[in-house]
Amino acid sequence: RLLVVVPGHGKASRAGVLRRSLNHIRAESQLAGIDSSCLVFGYNAELDAKAFALGHGCRVEVRLGGVFLGFLVDAAMSDTLRRTHPDFVLLLVDDIDVTPVRVPEFLNIMRRNKLDIASPTLGGTHRFFLGMQPWTLKRPGAVGRRVTFIEFQATFLTYKAFDVLRHIVMPELSRTWGYDLLLPAAFRAIVGRLPRMALIDTMVMIHTGPWKGSTTLDGRIALAEMTALLQHYHS
Image 1: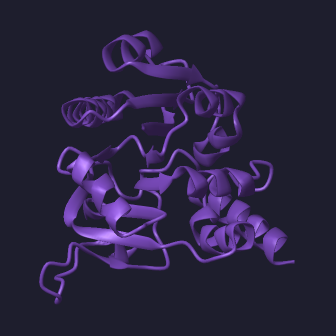
Image 2: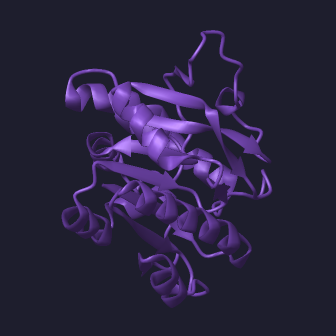
């Protein structure tokens, strides 16, 4: 089972990309016999909740003023997990185009390699973390590479890894940045080993929005929140 979670949508300019991605995931899942569902959190009243619910089979919850990973501790998130019992969760940012990603094959790669967290590599307008961009792999037959950090854009997690992520989210400290840095250590502390993480270079997601205008939260506020979060966990 696959659960797609969109942690924040509300800009009309991103609706087309998100619809294409959700349609692609649903179509590929149906062809492969994968039971998929989705949960979309909206952060303003402009979100056409009815259109998403009817057109994509998604549960839609509007939380005015909500921000990104703060949605993961919402009661609707807990309820959806209880109802769907997913094996994998896809955490999908709403301006990421995942239509180039072959979802059933991606999940098979995770199973074969016993990955806890994995992501396609990143193309398009985003230019922050170069390690997320596709690499030329030297080993014949390789489809990706093990890593110790994955930036949340379109991130596939096992249920166990997603549960760890939710466990460390503290919206009163940070709603956005810092959790991707904390997740490996938190996984080790809770599960007893480091997570197996990988970037799949043979599949590329596309960042479609403007790079520096891609966040719904002022960068200075996000940085201050991340600093508070890291200080809390490292104290």
